Length: 151
Image (tube, rainbow, N blue to C red; front, side):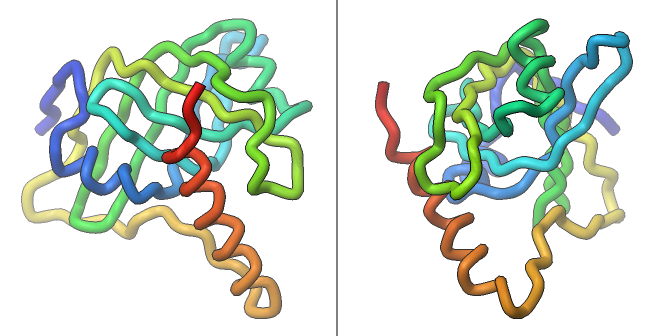
């Protein structure tokens, strides 16, 4: 049963304040969907911040089309597709050792895609054991920077 709203419901906003991974869907230059895995944070019910790698087709798609969707699959059977308009907030997220822009999605439509009685496994990164501590620290720093950055 799909429910559609124009802003993030409280259950999703509360989750996204801490940050989580999501699938970023953009429109490729061939007209087909393109998908990338990214980090997201929300501070308000109408805006989500996310990362997009420099030099990637994803960032080129966002610059060309300014439209994107975020597929969120999180603990507690939170399954949402969020559509909106994307824009760059900051050219470089400092917390990453690679070049990644901080972007914003202005929420236009939120679809609750959960099914009563069905649960899914949340999206999440599984870091190699020898890199886990450093990567989790970097991921936490990215979420913090996304939350704390002001224009």
